[in-house]
Image (cartoon, rainbow, N blue to C red):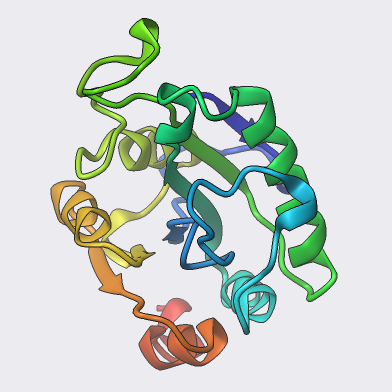
Length: 189
């Protein structure tokens, strides 16, 4: 639910400056999914992650992370732990030339151990809430935007938000992103 905006620029909602975005799931797409990863010192980027984020930024896309973090609802860690993990992720991606515009995370889960997080929240993927909020916050052009995730719930959220979803099943993220992005000249149209 909480959002940390760490990227460059202020969103423009003037009706004229809508930018495309690549929405990334976090665990299993940008970083190794070790099962509820939350300790900054245990962060490991997936191969090509930093370079992939750098590529999409060079091509004029915003880079936005949308991630379910049910470990909060399960009592395994807190929201502050997620924020610290994201700060480490920002640093690791920057070393490879990548920059994230914003993080959106959903701490809710229908079977949460912690009562205040127990619900099927509109932000929890496969619901499109996080994507919809980012589209509004950053004046995103959904017709030119995509989501990259490693689970079917990611793809379902993308479709519910009216954007294309791509299932990343592992390997080098830079190679994957390079294969699905349109040529850079297509963005200038």
